[in-house]
Amino acid sequence: MRALARLVARADGRGGTALVELHGETPLLLRQTPTDGGVATVHLVGGAAGPLAGDDLRLEIEVGPGAAVRVHSVAASIALPGRAGAVSRMAVRAVVHAGATLHWLPEQLVAAAGCAHLAESRIELDAGATLRWRDELICGRYGEAPGGAVVHTQVDYAGRPLLRQSLAVGPHAPGWAGPAVLGGAPATGSLLVVDPSQLAGPPTAEGSVARLPLAGGPATLWTATAADAHTLRAHLTAPGSSAV
Image (cartoon, rainbow, N blue to C red):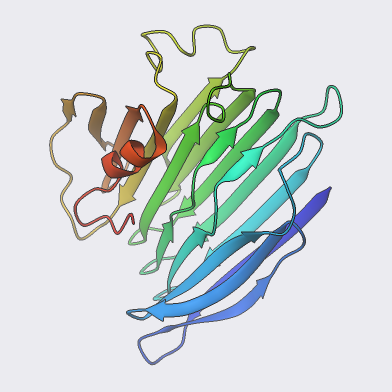
C-alpha cells in the first residue's frame, strides 16, 4: 500500500493558525481537532492495520512563519510482517519556517515480531523556528521478541546539520539489546527540543535518562530507556516541552 498525507499551516493574521492544506490517504488520515491556545491541533488516524511490510507511507508537513501546529496520533503504530522480504516504510518530511512552531508528539511505534520497518524523519528548521519532536519505540508486543526496525532522524537548523540519529533493533541488528545500546530495555525514545527563547542547560545523566545540549543550534536532546511505554513517556515529558 502507498499513501501520501500533507499538512500545510499558515498564520491567520489574528494570532492563530489556519490549516490551508490537510489531506491524506488510507491509512494516513489527518483530522483537525479543537485548537489549543492558538495552536492548530491535528491527529493522525490509522485507517488500516499496519504498517505492513511492503507499505510505503509518506507525510509532508510545512509550518509557515508565525504559525503553530501540534500533531498527535490516536493510537500506537504497530509495524507488522507482510510479504516475505518486503520492508514497510514511514517517511516524515517537515519544514518549519522562522517564527513557526511544530510539536510532533505521536504515540509509540511498536516493532511486532517478524516486522521489517524503516521510520525516517527529515526536519528542516529556519533560524528562529521552534520544535518539539518525540520518537518512541517499543521492542515487540507483550511477551514477544521484536521484529526488525530502524528509526532514523535528521534535523537541520538554519541550513546546518543539528542532529543525525539512528537506532536499529531486532534480529538483524547485532548487539541492540546489549549494554552498549538498550541494555535489555524494551522501550526507548528521544525528545528533541529546539527553542530560541530558552538556554540549553548542561549535559546530565540520571539513571536511564540523559540530556544533551546540541552544538548546532538552541537545542536539547533527551534520550531514555524504560521497562514499559508508560515509564518511557514520563521520562520524555521535559519541563516546558509540551510533550504530553
